[in-house]
Image (cartoon, rainbow, N blue to C red; front, side):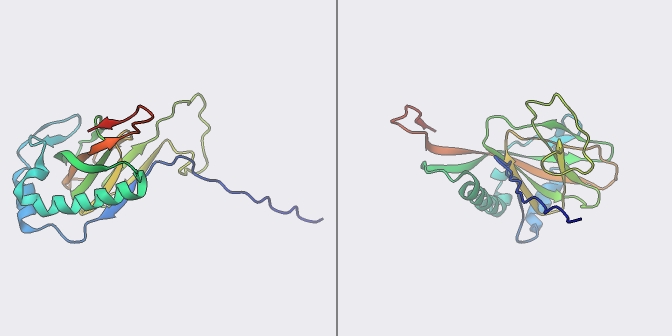
Length: 210
């Protein structure tokens, strides 16, 4: 009996969520590490962990070179993902430190009033630390348990994280950190990005000067 020929098909990810993954080209400098260490105690409680009292850490002169490096990554994201014909310039708005210790976590949340958000890892262990991204299901009446999870059927996705890693994503994407089981310190720097310039089209009555 002849075997039926296998059906040919493709599955494409339509309207995918862009998650930008990269890492710093060099290690943190002594000045940068000293700044991070000083800010370990300059924090306030967050939902599940701690966040720095300073909400503009990248404006500190000690982090001048680091901020410049991160701005270059932001430009790459805008060029390859957003690719706008409008005359806009992305810029970092707020930036802060996150500190997570054993038995702590970071609640599921998203970042309002920004276009993209990012996390840069300062201290983390790839074996124990990760970040979770959650899918926004507007129609989720049925749950068909998958044999294996993939980017199409998963309700969330997890990336291990390590020092120097940079992750950028649309600010509307919900993300979280699971309860930390290992005693190592987890420290990250988060920031939001907006744009300056003009967006929209004047003839379409959608122009907005920012």
